[in-house]
Image (cartoon, rainbow, N blue to C red; front, side):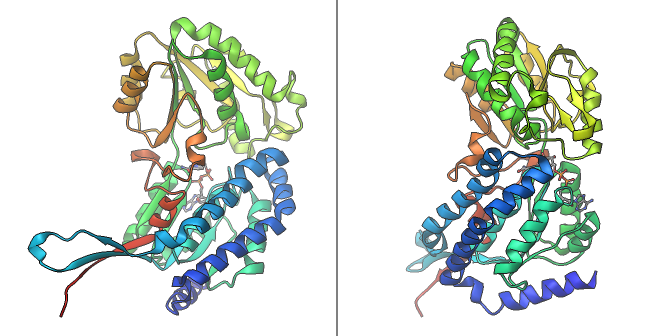
Amino acid sequence: MAEYGELVTRQRTFFHTGQTKEMGFRTRALNKLQDAIGKHEKDLLAALRKDLNKSEAEAYSSEIRIVLEEIRFTLENISSWMAPKQVDTPSFLGDATSVIYPEPYGVALIISPWNYPFQLAVAPLVGAMAAGNCAVLKPSEFTPETSHMLAKLVREDFPEEYIAVVEGEVEASTALLKEKFDTIFFTGSTPVGKVVMEAAAKHLTPVTLELGGKSPCIVHGDADLESAAKRIARGKFLNAGQTCVAPDYLLIQREVKDAFLAELKAAIHALYGEDITRNPDFPRIVSEKHFNRLSAFLSDGELVSGGRTDASRLFIEPTILDSVTWEDPVMRDEIFGPILPVLVYDDLTEALDKITSRPKPLALYVFSENTEVQDRILGSVSFGGGCVNETLAHLTSPFLPFGGVGESGMGSYHGQGSFDTFSHKKSILKRKA
Ligand code: NAD
């Protein structure tokens, strides 16, 4: 579409004025974004409720607060991130000095998914702005209320030649990907990640791909079962399991399985009430297509808990499936819903072999009190990132770069990781005349 070509040209022209490179411009823009989020907080929470039935508490903590924290941390550190870094020079280069200048790529394209429709569009945007880029944002068509609010918020405070939001279906994304951007940041599924990378290759545009996958959660025999159950229930069922780093499946040592499942059931009820079908705040499944896909898994294995659905409100109860095998349909692709398959192991080596024979996961969680067991698991499986005796929390720390590896993605962001992802490092050797 010609209009996108024109939009990119306008952004590139604006970028070449050099304004976005000034620190004052960047910090003013980030402060403005912070204020705009504050001003529209109620509208954003209402949009997230309409799109996914997220409660105010869940939407605020997992969407808005994370972004506000990211802006705060960025403003606190931006001057040191932007500063040229003097590095050593080898002696054979005599009296020369060496300096690395971080510089913005130019015009960035950010494509985001529906599961955390605000956070996953705006957190990368913060990095793009901090690094001094212009940006075009393409949020998901499956959460139209939030995408629309985002477009409104951005339009009110930023000129289109600096930041623009393109709402629309896949066609809009396809048309945008035909244009030449200076960097592309994509969050979404692995198959679409391949489409994005192929389109980027035509222009040799660098990409960051934040993808998905089946993230294992290992509960070893020596784990604190009560605490593990609480943390796994919270991580798995947040946003009805529609979280890229949610524990996808549970791998548990046989002798503690029954005791653990009793703790897990109790933890689910403590979180959502005795009758979850009556909980007004449990998020819904995003679409009928995903509701049907997930419902088909409910006949896999043996139902231990949950299993009730209501198509009229796209509701699926937090569900535990026991006696699942590696060959069952629920174990083929990322589940992305409130269904937890349970597989047992007797020997850790056998469990690790199964994981490493599959695509590299985005996250992995280990529950064990034994540091040798923890280290063995962390050292033998390649995955994006994860936690020991916790779930999800690694992605909330600005000090931990967040991203996948192999089929679960490439590149990372959060904190300085975001600034670096949207910056080119220009290396200069200086010699006296
Ligand atoms: P998706 O890949 O279907 O869509 C993501 C975005 O890509 C949307 O904006 C969509 O419009 C666009 N898109 C879809 N098909 C396209 C195509 N053929 N060409 C160009 N653009 C296209 O993903 P989704 O269903 O919105 O999100 C769920 C997936 O995202 C899961 O796999 C999940 O694990 C992953 N995810 C990853 C992270 C992460 O940080 N690694 C975070 C959230 C979600």
